[in-house]
Image 1 (cartoon, rainbow, N blue to C red):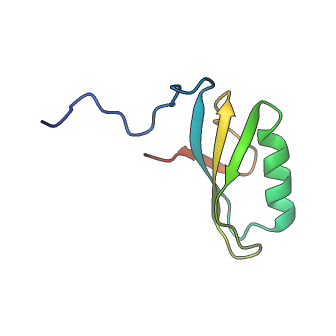
Image 2: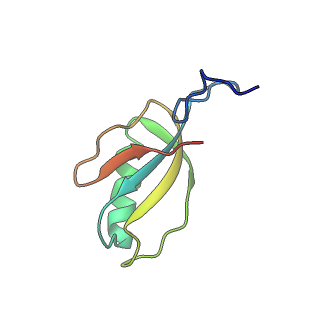
Length: 83
């Protein structure tokens, strides 16, 4: 039986803190861009994992973060990753 109440981009809290899977998009991100992004996210949240990234060619990176949701970072398009 299919569930009609399923949400694809909701926080997951079964193990304590709220966990978010986020995508941060910016054209041709450099290593410095990634470092700055991680520092910005860590101001309010814990970065648990960072997805695949190639400096100078990646246009986005996924992160699993814990704690407060990050919805806006200057210079990036931020979106939830459906799971």
